[in-house]
Length: 360
Image (cartoon, rainbow, N blue to C red; front, side, top):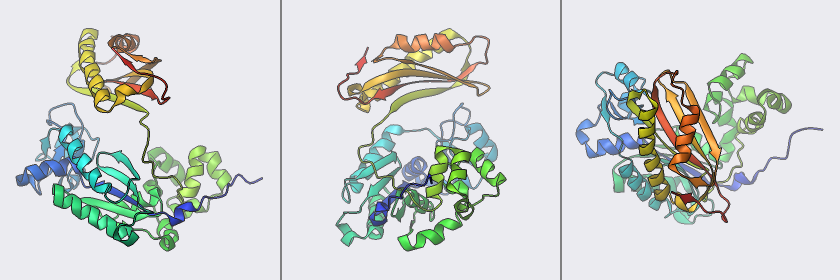
């Protein structure tokens, strides 16, 4: 009996727009400091700090700088790079304004982060139902209101819409129409498929699989045996098939905060003192995100050492107290290990509506 299940073709009638801001944090900062235009800029704090690049502009990317890169590495690649501090309050405010623009066209919006979102405009009557025209208007409105640019991708499902938004970056848009999907997808490199990381790519390349055409030639059962559940997803994605819906009420599963330290923490006392600070940040974020009204099912802690080894622990609980995190710290702290460069704490939510969260 074949493992292949009937394919849901509903997305063929869908119209999905993926909007992705161009170098969002960096663009906002350069907007406010126009003298930095055309200069390499990264939002990451001071170059001497033990931080990482949050985002950078295209002038910086020419040097090989990218998000999540240690700021000290970015400095080596581009000695003239300008580092600016992160201002999350400002970015959240702008993001909120951008979402107001989205809501003029549809109520079905799935935020991915502050700088990107999916919009289901299938039933929208704006622009005579033309998603290309809607995307152009949205991008223009963002520029008019906030003086920053956005790129957009338009297609009949989320996978293709996200791919399309990357095609004409920055400040552009691209559409993949239904009758173009087959031709578009066959030459797509496998690394462009969401979820294909370095190890999966290496495993597939070893088998001679470099693009979606190659993937389409692999039997369903073989892909499943090779990659498990992800093999099932790949079987459909390499054909341009993705029937995930745009979730306008997506539920947050967890929330966490962490700090990376300029100077390593070398004692339990130092860690305990810093733990108090990030615990207060967690409580503040919970209240800002309306998390204080949600139930939790666990608290967790993360430690990253100076050698980049990571240790973590969690405990099932329906309450949040500082002592819970302090006890978790005691549990995993190792005085014989390397100095600590990062501490993080967080909670996992139990989205059952009948439970209550208790913060002390």
